Image (cartoon, rainbow, N blue to C red; front, side, top):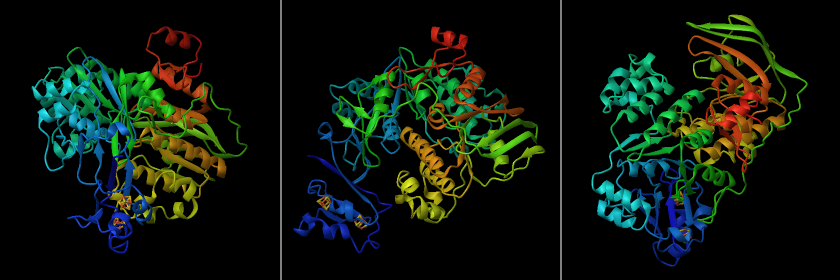
Amino acid sequence: MKRIAVVDKDKCNPAGCGNYLCAKLCPIDREGSDCIFVGDDKKAKIDEALCIGCGICVHRCPFGAIEIINLPVELERNPIHRYGQNEFALYSLPTPIFGKVVGVLGVNGIGKSTAIKIIAGVLKPNLGDFTRAATFQEVVGYFKGTEAQAFFEAVRDGKIVPAYKPQSVDKIPQQFSGSVRDLLTKADQKGQFTQITQSLDLTKILDNDIKNISGGELQRVAIAATALKKANLYIFDEPTSYLDIKQRLKVSDLIKCLADDHTAVLVIDHDLIILDYMTDLVHLMYGKERVFGAVSLPKSTRTGINVYLGGYLKEENIRFRDHEIHFGSKPPDHKEGKTIVSSWKDVSKKLGNFLLSAAGGSIRQSDIIGILGENGIGKTSFIKMLAKAMDPDFGVIDEKVMVAYKPQYLQPNSELVLTVLHDAIARYEAQLIKPLNLKGLFTKQLDQLSGGELQRVAIAHCLSQKADLYLLDEPSAHLDVEQRLLVSRIIHDLMELRGTSCIVIDHDLLFIDYLSKKIMVFDGEPAVRGEVHGPFSMQDGMNKFLSNLNMTFRRDHESNRPRANKPGSQMDREQKAENKLYYS
Ligand code: SF4
Ligand code: SF4
């Protein structure tokens, strides 16, 4: 059996473990061979050919730096790419298909971005020989007999012209100076500047400096710049981050339009409703985070997402979750708590030219309230007023409650995770630290964490505080599907356990549906006026929100998950006539 050994260089600390404890305990080393040895970088290295997979080093390393995994039989071959000795290995790639939008779905750290960087030509694969990049001919040979062979032959022959939107758009202001118009004019190889900027609502910000635009605007600019390039393979890595639902749907419509008989599109995203709406086929990625990743055969999007929720890949015989994820066709029964923990009446607040108003509402004990609404409509400002981080100009907000608040944008600094999570470690090891997998981050500084790691730390920090009301602003940002559903469960269980209440602002409708017991809706005109409505029951809240969007959702008959109806379809018309826009 072939196995793979990965040593996390950041965690490996020979001075702290008593001088290569793993090598002292390894039975192969004890017999005189060098299975575990000291690498040039002074970290532990493991010879995978000698390792017998006893697991002693894995269990005894005090820093959890080692992973030894027995590979499934079908992966007993060289990887398509390995970053270095005892580093992450990727075993296969998704296949772009002309005329189709193909989605890639999988947890963070499973190699999705590595895979699409290889397809985009940004990263040269090495076929497991990390001393050199493979030639095109070697790559074609590697994929012989598979669908990917034809694709790499086309790459070899210079017939594939890729356009790639990377995952992280926050780096664009460091790489480009000038206005949005300058950047998009430079990118426009197709002469579609007006059409694409209009379709993504960028017209009003064309003369703004790239350095001064918001995360959501930057995301749409990056998508527009990619779509404006002349290419026959478009690749989008997480195009929905920072966008509200309306913007996600507009971006999806644009991306769908790019695929034709001569053009293929690949998309990675964690918003299942949008991935379902936007793609024709999906690949699921499986493996072990930060150790190895592999790609399933393509499946129709509906089947692929249901398989993902089921947690079992039949063809590959891989179980990647020990339980299935279910959705209810009806909203869950929610017993109204007797105690009111916060309330407001006739509140208004002027912020520059923007006016926010809330007629009246209350939050009761054990409520979990999802907030839905466009960007720039005052959701964060309202939550700040509830958190007493900002006072209203007029009206009353009940001041009796203790509030814990997780802001939308997290400011990393040099503080250690261990210090920030002091209370969570002392009191919520089982409820927060373990499920959010935070132990391995304790010795890192906040500014050394990835976006997803920082988000998990911030959620744990907020939920570990003593409070009556928890306010979480966009907790799903940078989290994968699995982590989003996990966070929903954690919030639910903690609120039940403590009899406290929680408000969550988010743009992932499936996450909000899975988590919430009630809904608040914000509407109005972005940057001009915002009006706060609710809290409502799930049914009334979803109906109000979707009527603003002019959309309806049906239930998948297998998994019960919500799926967007095609505007104007028979289901869409029937559900609108019955005013059952979300729950039928
Ligand atoms: Fe020590 Fe763990 Fe590094 Fe081995 S892997 S040298 S046990 S810290
Ligand atoms: Fe040695 Fe492999 Fe056992 Fe680790 S798992 S102690 S490397 S034989």
